[in-house]
Image 1: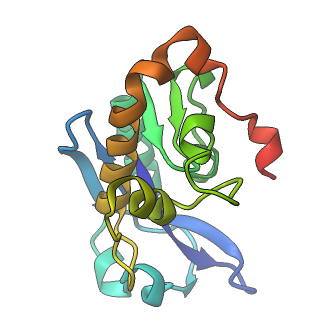
Image 2 (image 1 turned 30 degrees about the vertical axis):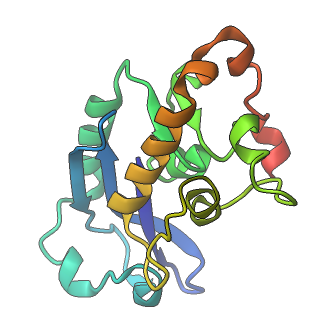
Length: 173
Protein backbone atom coordinates (compact mmCIF):
# COMPACT_ATOMS: atom_id res chain seq x y z
CA UNK A 1 0.00 0.00 0.00
CA UNK A 2 1.13 3.52 -0.68
CA UNK A 3 -0.56 6.94 -0.49
CA UNK A 4 0.15 10.38 -1.87
CA UNK A 5 -1.01 13.46 -0.02
CA UNK A 6 -2.05 17.00 -0.79
CA UNK A 7 -2.35 19.85 1.69
CA UNK A 8 -5.43 21.55 3.09
CA UNK A 9 -5.97 24.19 5.74
CA UNK A 10 -5.11 27.87 5.85
CA UNK A 11 -1.45 27.21 6.50
CA UNK A 12 -1.26 24.34 3.99
CA UNK A 13 0.09 21.99 6.63
CA UNK A 14 -2.78 19.54 6.94
CA UNK A 15 -2.02 16.50 4.76
CA UNK A 16 -4.91 14.48 3.35
CA UNK A 17 -4.94 11.44 1.08
CA UNK A 18 -5.14 12.29 -2.61
CA UNK A 19 -4.26 8.89 -4.09
CA UNK A 20 -3.92 5.35 -2.81
CA UNK A 21 -2.63 2.18 -4.42
CA UNK A 22 -2.82 -1.34 -3.02
CA UNK A 23 -1.06 -4.26 -4.69
CA UNK A 24 -1.23 -7.98 -4.02
CA UNK A 25 1.69 -10.31 -3.25
CA UNK A 26 2.63 -10.52 -6.94
CA UNK A 27 2.51 -6.75 -7.39
CA UNK A 28 -0.78 -6.70 -9.30
CA UNK A 29 -2.84 -3.60 -8.58
CA UNK A 30 -5.97 -4.25 -6.52
CA UNK A 31 -6.86 -0.59 -6.00
CA UNK A 32 -5.49 2.59 -7.55
CA UNK A 33 -7.66 5.64 -7.07
CA UNK A 34 -7.57 9.34 -6.47
CA UNK A 35 -9.51 10.66 -3.49
CA UNK A 36 -11.76 13.73 -3.39
CA UNK A 37 -10.74 15.79 -0.35
CA UNK A 38 -13.36 17.11 2.09
CA UNK A 39 -11.62 20.46 2.57
CA UNK A 40 -10.33 23.06 0.14
CA UNK A 41 -6.91 22.16 -1.24
CA UNK A 42 -4.19 24.70 -0.53
CA UNK A 43 -1.30 22.78 -2.15
CA UNK A 44 -1.65 19.95 -4.66
CA UNK A 45 2.07 19.16 -4.32
CA UNK A 46 2.09 18.61 -8.09
CA UNK A 47 5.89 18.86 -8.19
CA UNK A 48 6.14 15.89 -5.79
CA UNK A 49 3.69 13.48 -7.40
CA UNK A 50 1.95 15.06 -10.37
CA UNK A 51 -1.50 15.38 -8.83
CA UNK A 52 -3.60 18.28 -10.10
CA UNK A 53 -7.15 19.51 -9.50
CA UNK A 54 -8.24 17.64 -12.64
CA UNK A 55 -7.23 14.28 -11.11
CA UNK A 56 -9.47 14.85 -8.09
CA UNK A 57 -12.45 16.41 -9.87
CA UNK A 58 -14.46 13.20 -10.33
CA UNK A 59 -12.66 11.08 -7.73
CA UNK A 60 -14.62 9.17 -5.09
CA UNK A 61 -14.90 10.83 -1.69
CA UNK A 62 -12.68 9.95 1.26
CA UNK A 63 -15.30 7.85 3.09
CA UNK A 64 -15.95 5.70 0.01
CA UNK A 65 -12.26 5.03 -0.53
CA UNK A 66 -11.70 4.52 3.20
CA UNK A 67 -14.35 1.76 3.21
CA UNK A 68 -12.88 0.16 0.10
CA UNK A 69 -9.40 0.17 1.63
CA UNK A 70 -10.71 -1.32 4.89
CA UNK A 71 -12.50 -4.10 2.98
CA UNK A 72 -9.38 -4.96 0.97
CA UNK A 73 -7.16 -5.02 4.05
CA UNK A 74 -9.48 -6.94 6.38
CA UNK A 75 -7.68 -9.97 7.84
CA UNK A 76 -4.77 -9.58 5.40
CA UNK A 77 -1.09 -8.85 5.80
CA UNK A 78 -0.47 -5.20 4.91
CA UNK A 79 2.86 -4.37 3.28
CA UNK A 80 4.16 -0.85 2.78
CA UNK A 81 6.79 1.72 3.68
CA UNK A 82 6.05 3.94 6.69
CA UNK A 83 2.70 2.26 7.27
CA UNK A 84 1.98 4.15 10.47
CA UNK A 85 1.77 7.43 8.57
CA UNK A 86 -0.44 5.94 5.87
CA UNK A 87 -2.79 4.24 8.30
CA UNK A 88 -3.11 7.48 10.26
CA UNK A 89 -4.04 9.36 7.08
CA UNK A 90 -6.76 6.78 6.40
CA UNK A 91 -7.89 6.79 10.02
CA UNK A 92 -7.56 3.02 9.86
CA UNK A 93 -6.22 0.74 12.54
CA UNK A 94 -4.68 -2.46 11.24
CA UNK A 95 -3.54 -5.20 13.62
CA UNK A 96 0.20 -4.81 14.28
CA UNK A 97 0.73 -8.55 13.76
CA UNK A 98 -0.56 -8.12 10.19
CA UNK A 99 1.70 -5.17 9.31
CA UNK A 100 4.95 -5.53 7.37
CA UNK A 101 6.62 -2.13 7.28
CA UNK A 102 9.72 -2.04 5.10
CA UNK A 103 10.92 1.09 6.89
CA UNK A 104 11.25 -0.71 10.21
CA UNK A 105 12.50 -4.25 9.50
CA UNK A 106 16.08 -4.37 10.80
CA UNK A 107 17.43 -6.80 8.19
CA UNK A 108 16.35 -4.38 5.46
CA UNK A 109 17.31 -1.16 7.25
CA UNK A 110 20.80 -2.52 8.02
CA UNK A 111 21.56 -2.77 4.31
CA UNK A 112 21.69 1.02 3.91
CA UNK A 113 24.75 2.14 5.90
CA UNK A 114 24.38 5.28 7.98
CA UNK A 115 20.58 5.39 7.71
CA UNK A 116 18.27 4.52 10.59
CA UNK A 117 15.15 4.96 8.42
CA UNK A 118 16.16 4.64 4.77
CA UNK A 119 13.72 5.90 2.18
CA UNK A 120 12.08 3.52 -0.24
CA UNK A 121 14.19 5.09 -3.01
CA UNK A 122 17.38 4.30 -1.06
CA UNK A 123 16.28 0.72 -0.46
CA UNK A 124 15.34 0.18 -4.11
CA UNK A 125 18.71 1.50 -5.28
CA UNK A 126 20.75 -0.42 -2.69
CA UNK A 127 18.99 -3.79 -2.89
CA UNK A 128 17.85 -3.97 -6.49
CA UNK A 129 19.81 -1.31 -8.37
CA UNK A 130 16.47 0.25 -9.30
CA UNK A 131 15.98 4.00 -9.52
CA UNK A 132 12.48 4.92 -8.44
CA UNK A 133 11.08 7.86 -10.39
CA UNK A 134 13.29 10.79 -9.47
CA UNK A 135 10.95 13.57 -10.58
CA UNK A 136 7.60 12.49 -9.15
CA UNK A 137 6.47 9.81 -6.74
CA UNK A 138 4.15 7.10 -7.97
CA UNK A 139 1.96 5.25 -5.49
CA UNK A 140 1.88 2.20 -7.78
CA UNK A 141 5.66 2.15 -8.06
CA UNK A 142 6.11 2.60 -4.30
CA UNK A 143 3.53 -0.04 -3.35
CA UNK A 144 5.11 -2.50 -5.80
CA UNK A 145 8.62 -1.78 -4.51
CA UNK A 146 7.55 -2.29 -0.89
CA UNK A 147 6.02 -5.63 -1.88
CA UNK A 148 9.19 -6.60 -3.76
CA UNK A 149 11.22 -5.88 -0.61
CA UNK A 150 8.82 -7.93 1.48
CA UNK A 151 8.99 -10.85 -0.95
CA UNK A 152 12.80 -10.78 -0.87
CA UNK A 153 12.86 -11.03 2.93
CA UNK A 154 9.57 -12.88 3.52
CA UNK A 155 11.02 -16.17 4.76
CA UNK A 156 13.15 -14.68 7.53
CA UNK A 157 10.64 -11.89 8.26
CA UNK A 158 7.85 -14.36 8.89
CA UNK A 159 9.99 -16.56 11.13
CA UNK A 160 9.63 -16.07 14.86
CA UNK A 161 13.06 -14.46 15.17
CA UNK A 162 12.43 -12.29 12.14
CA UNK A 163 9.21 -10.90 13.61
CA UNK A 164 11.19 -9.71 16.64
CA UNK A 165 13.45 -7.67 14.32
CA UNK A 166 10.80 -5.11 13.50
CA UNK A 167 11.85 -1.81 15.04
CA UNK A 168 9.55 -0.13 17.49
CA UNK A 169 7.42 2.55 15.83
CA UNK A 170 8.12 4.75 18.86
CA UNK A 171 11.76 4.95 17.78
CA UNK A 172 10.78 6.40 14.40
CA UNK A 173 9.62 9.73 15.80
